[in-house]
Length: 285
Image 1 (tube, rainbow, N blue to C red):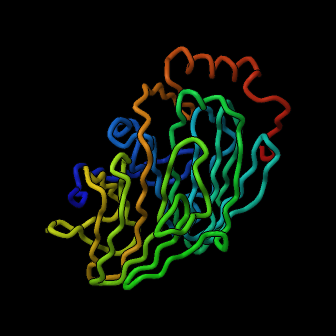
Image 2: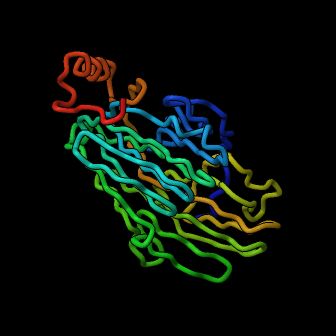
Image 3: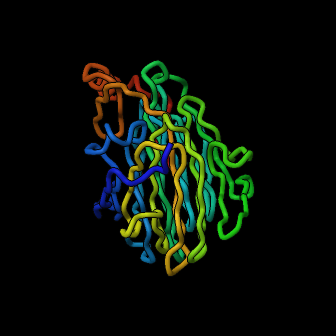
């Protein structure tokens, strides 16, 4: 099969979420069908703590997994399972909301806050699994060094190396690639997977394309069993993300994603009736 090429270019749009966090929303409801199983991608990059320290106070999730990858900065996390802690430079967290979790994410003032949060849809048969939280620290993430490139295998498998995390319910690969100027890097991809790239520093191009891969854009890649990148004028850092599509209906309302409107309504009814999560008291008023 040929190399994958760009079939959709999605421009990230500045927005404010949580209690007043400024971020760039790259993927969202308009891209649900084409980027399946990936629901949302938020990117944050700021030197000003006022942009993010108000954070995301206690809120619910059901029916999804959230994956937060922090390149620089620090985020305090606490949830209704009793988990709490702080992730820092190079760390990430994988949260399976399943049947229901309440949590808060509070970024701490840092010289630079740089990272991504990806929402992964759960299959219908796993929407109501028990919630789970995993911390993945930077030393746990293996790196593969190649000619002109360094690849952090955050999730999935690359070049015979297992990543720090493996999806329990959706087959996901998440690679953080550092590509030197002018270098070429090529990787095999599962032909059945949805694959996209997001550049967060520097510039690069796809071979046989005159258009550069721009910052704060998500590029959906078409059919093929591999993809190649060539470094531009500066060192480039990007994430290459792939996953098995679910091909299921999506009923999305705020932090909850189900398959039908009835399931969505039930989730909010459970919240109103106090049946969503029991014995939870927010630690930050």
